Image (cartoon, rainbow, N blue to C red; front, top):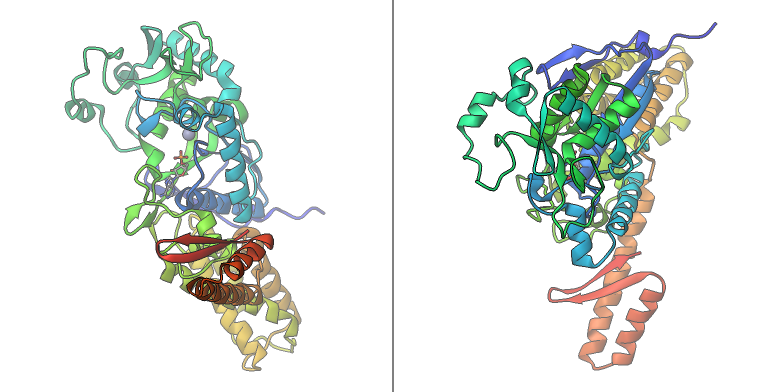
Length: 498
Ligand code: AMP
Ligand code: ZN
């Protein structure tokens, strides 16, 4: 007899940004879930803030799979149409980078898509089921624009096509996701400039006519141009998941206007609400301010892995950084600091040590010290409560304490309970949280290696003072030959491990 999937006994609740409430989760089709998450605009390397959002949704993906759902997870790559400052006018972010670096736009796209995949792979994120690109769906975008025009919710102006927000709001509710009211928005915006093609400032572009210098352009019934940024997500989500699907996610900063516009486009094109559960992941901050490429207030994942940033006092394993992020609820702001990361590292190694100690535990006739079945259910309760990973981790540390007591013969466990404990711990730590067992020894070895290189840097500096340049060059070159690069700067010499 086939056993029931876990989701029949575990009752998941999801905080729905659309209603502002935690709701019992019910997929459209029993046992199946369609989930769409807005992917990156691939014009630069991802920063740690971007990674937090994708790790938050990796947790969601992993837990849904763990519960036994068949999940189709679609996450796009934005490779056209996203303009500077998320505005309606300005240069395409990818074209701009291509111009500045004298590359083909698709060279920029390729370079940063590869970087994005490499970094998420290091964090042990599971790749999505489908990863569509905006440029691969121009035809579908043109088709949906035609439908929105036919339905009376868009107008053509000087070769561009705009969504008519006022018209839409007569029959629908523009602003329901972000809690805004169109009348207030109108009252608080400046008048349009005379050159604008739009009827109202709130209207947004579905298709933009390309200026002569704009390199990324496609033919359409209205002009040679390019699609609006919001439209690609509507097109790719409905194409692969249907006109209404279960979960749509993204960073909190995308709620308005991006997701608000997606709802409007979906309703205008299909006459149905596109998404049942909207999920928004909160921001990673640095010195209390949002990590953001445009302000330069960022730390890169590579810097975490090699320790090459003045904020850090050492390098950290990717899985430790992942653990640090999962120790916060995905809906809370998380501030990055070396101290916080270092504290997470200590906790992480305690957890791994306890798991590795399991092989040394002897079982007995009774279980004393932890009710294993209740504990297991409490782990599920934490995750069923809108993926509350910090509460789950607190529960895992109750097990760590118990395991340490078992090891010291201060507690006992039966064989049956031991199996439950071990399986539950493995499932939550490795499958659901997606952590990886890098042991403290390898981290310790990295510290020792850093110490040895620092010593060589000191000896090289002394050789230079003594004008023994042959020796100083030999140290630099031979380190380079084994993949350790020395970099001389104003603050002294630093190094990177390749
Ligand atoms: P972008 O490539 O700018 O479109 O961003 C990709 C994703 O990263 C979006 O879902 C953003 O909401 C998210 N994101 C950007 N900055 C941060 C941050 N500081 N913390 C968390 N997520 C962020
Ligand atoms: Zn999107």
